[in-house]
Length: 573
Picture 1 (cartoon, rainbow, N blue to C red):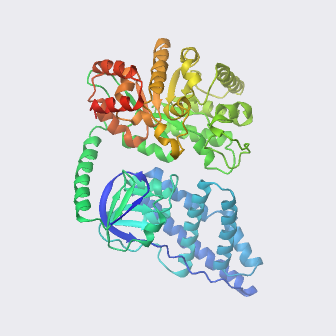
Picture 2 (cartoon, one colour):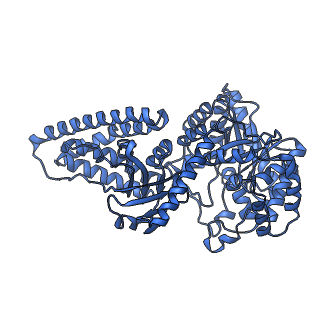
């Protein structure tokens, strides 16, 4: 029995059989051709491209049926790549000018492109390079007369591979597929998006040596809740997981029944449950659990996926599409928050000794108004197409907030002069993630329409603990009394001014903290869509009035571990 660790990206627990998949790279013969062979090679390329187009259109049709329109759009991107005039011209120029055969020309064109992409040092582009290779393999297989389909799986196959391309994923026999175990992959990889949409248990970034320790047909346990993969389990482990699967499936089935139920306490207190998202692709997950809206849209992830800054029109189209898809439900859009651990590869930022306390968030935006004003204008233009709210991150002083509000007024005046529609009553909120802002919450509450408490950074800055440092990870605690007192203080300040206050970050889905947040008076929690139904179930068991006693007890405690033990002992899960 061997156990391997990874990162779960699509929840589930399954017992299946190993289907080890190694990519069969097309054999590429490169050789020189004569002048009279040039037209023949170009015709071969055009015919292979047409065949690949036909295959991709069939894949898209299947994906549209199996996955839904949004996920099927992945293959629109593939079709666009396949028919890219620049790639087409590059390959044909190589055939004509270098007098090399079609396979050799394709290889050289892709090698040159790969070199450029790898230099960008951007994970998103490295993943898109895999998509290009997927398209190229379709052409090469068409030239070779070979099928692009994966070998038929056996029953309950758990595919163990380095990675899978979108076309490989789409062409798998889903009835025989139990899960994916990938040593590579990525959070924004198209295969991950497809797996989430199909709700196929998937773990990525699994230790690479798993490929050396598995054989086809072996029993494999895929725990895509904990992020564990167990190969050839012993009898005791197998029985344990059979029991776990029964309990997990029963729990998930029960949770799905809550999809259309209200998120309300036993005594009638409504708690909004919104989703945190980083991309357009994640919107579908909000609908799957009937979330109350988007409580945090992290706009920097749109910039992280690109090789250059997004212009106004592109941003406008993104924000508008999200707002329209949410059909009137609130969409809280956080202004770009780069710096710290989120550096743009194409943005010339200075190297800092302590980037988390340096030039980041709103500090960059106020200095680089050429970037900031573009985003604000795009957001305001999109605001008349749905229920968009603006969230300002990383504010540490009232002066910073007023500068941002002044810029928003400037942009609104521009739009008025240009006769461009926007929501004149758009709500502006403040992310509370720095202790100075939390302490002065009563002052800030007079200046904005709502608060969103960013617990991840608030904890880090309040107790001076780097949450990414494994050596001191044990000190990072959402139960720290100073953190809870700050949150309670912020909620009181918001209530006194009559503004809404929500909690986002990992603590929002913490089942032991949710009752305390509700007792404080928080009426909205924003979290990953995967936790919404579970949190709804907990909320529906709670009696709001009974929580006051527990809140008072917790507020009088002075040790984080004691607070944690007490909240666990409440046994409200």
